[in-house]
Length: 253
Image (cartoon, rainbow, N blue to C red):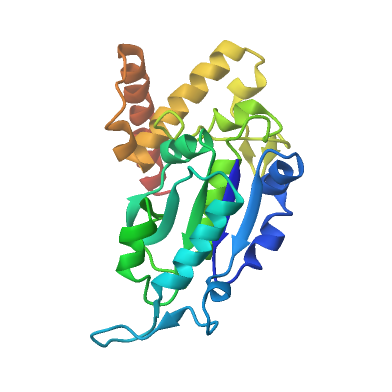
């Protein structure tokens, strides 16, 4: 897989490319990562200008961005989607990251200032991506988030392949709670079932916790999940216990 990032600040990928999962993927040859600066494709070295019609800020010009995108295509696999990080885009989710991970790579455009000339979007961009309903100073951080989400799903990148499967959002649910040593910390103990050695009971407990936590924290995730009779019973039991816990917390000493 090859990923090219079009950005006014190509230095942002240097440290990113050396750390953690991303660094492992690149060092193992599972992926290639390169950056292209639109300034290099402008005769004046200027990639932005004032918006027609007036208004605050600057707008990124189409020609320098188009030149950077063309160079990225020439340097790698031609048939890759061009993605623009933008509040206008479709929200990024795990399913979308998984689809990208099965492809040959992507060209990611990090916008800046007041945005990107609309003609560039119409001419060169295949899809716009949003990481949430918030505004940041530029598309670099969202782009790195997108790249990380994709690279960690490549085969053999994670130390344990189960890490990419047994986690939040993969099956439309949040992940169950995790515990490690010590067994008791500030009076809070690890659930006994996790110390039992009974793997069937552990799997069931984790399934119940994943369902319940999703219902409490992100009920929208369960709207698209078809729960069977057993899962429905598990969820009802969790909610009953959860509500009982709230009542106990509200009881005065």
